[in-house]
Length: 75
Image (cartoon, rainbow, N blue to C red):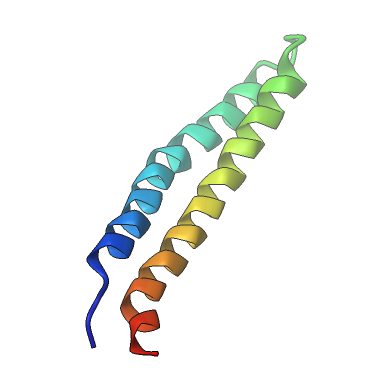
């Protein structure tokens, strides 16, 4: 059983991109809730939610890629 190193590094890169988004997304959502009197409130809230969902998406894509690099090569 051998791990495909190129696919493994690709999966690690996905997770590395997701890690800062896990901090940026909730911070943007928090900022939107603090500044409710601002007219840009809903736009900032939408951007924060999109960033948070994108972080979750990148994490799942990274984990799937890492698992494929370890177990898909056995076929």
